[in-house]
Image (tube, rainbow, N blue to C red; front, side):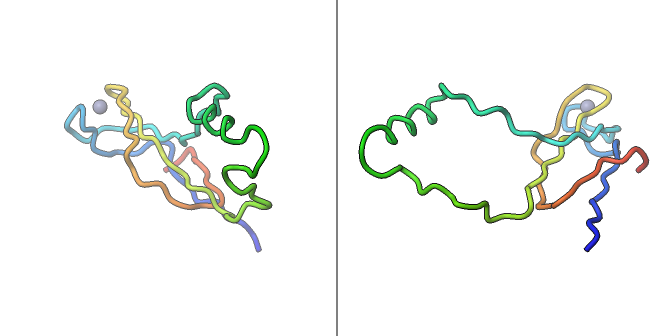
Length: 100
Ligand SMILES: [Zn+2]
C-alpha cells in the first residue's frame, strides 16, 4: 500500500479572534515538549515505583496505535496571535505544502 500524506497548505485565510477579522494565518505542526525529570508528576511516579512491589502502571509491551493525533497551530500574520484550540485529527502522515 502506498502511503499518501495528507497535504495542508502553508498559509490559510481564517478568523483571528484578536484582530476580529479574517486574516492570513501561517500553519505549523504542534510538537509536544520535552519530558522533565523533576516535574511534580514524574517525581511522584518515581516515588511510587521505588522499593519492592509492583510498578504503578503496567509496562506496555508494544504501542497499540498506528496513527498520531496531529494538531495544527494557526499563527496570525498580522498580530502574531496563535490559535491552538483547533481539533486535532488522527493521521499517519501529514505534509505542510508550499502551495495551497
Ligand atoms: Zn490577528
